[in-house]
Image 1 (cartoon, one colour):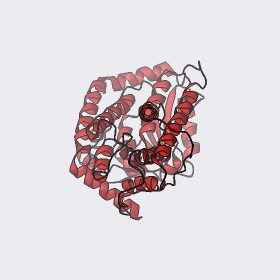
Image 2: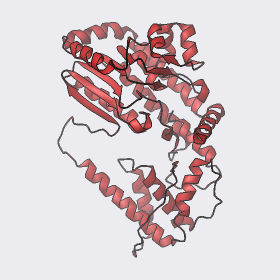
Image 3: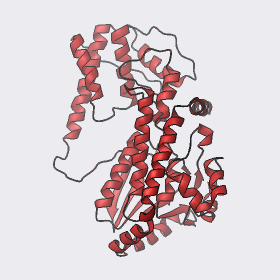
Image 4: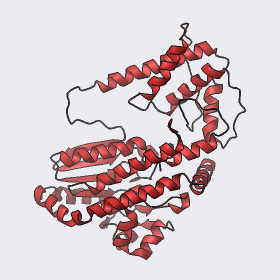
Length: 395
């Protein structure tokens, strides 16, 4: 989860000086800078560092690496630390970015840093002024949200990343559910673009350390997770998952909060929490034993057993399974029929079914997030994640 980021990054970066902008990325990037003749003052440089913290939009890892490299060059000069090992991905990316600046003078690096921050700030302001007055209109970068024929469709849209959930997607899903709860749709459907429903958490969630350090990272991550799961608990309309392919982690645990789950026969369901030194979330510590019994829930949540779609259906986690060749046609025919049912009657029926447990679910969500906050700061969790990343890098 997001809280692992701080501790993992701190361990990997413990021997390297840190800039006010704590930036980590995996790709090795060449940095191209503007050799302007202007010279920024120390005050300009300081103001630019403060501006970075106020950016409304994440500029992306490549730009953040440029900022990191320019900061190091402006304050320390040319790269002066040994090149990290090949599998020390985070420090190697930072070293590559800094080293690529060569003998660029400190004054030039300082000016380039100020110029880059200024361009980012201008871009952010222009973006925030788009569509002024378009009340209720929401743009998404990690989702595709459409409303038609009484159905609001929320599509996880990072197919090249197997729809892994990064921090931005967490926030956008919360916003999309909030908007869908108030729109004119009858039912809401969540699905994935590409061959995966969702591969769980994106490992780039483990990359940035905030100014407050790793404890703040864990705290903020736990709060975001609590809000994310809470948006499913409180959702007032029929909420349906269309699982078009493999599902991992939180995309599986939250299924117990959906009103129906339809799956392709090529879908699988995997919750490898113990493998990563973590513990269940999404209220699954309560919903899974209730749905499938304690023993079967333990196999999934504790031992990490992966279920096929038909196994998940037999255990009650999935409502119905369809052949992949006819999945989309069959499921959307059915959902369009559901969308024509009286909307208020469906809302009221869901309220009767769900409301008695809502308070309990929120309490369970809070407890799970509190436990996870501690797990993310544990050596056991950090070591497990490091092992996973090392193995992944060798593939």
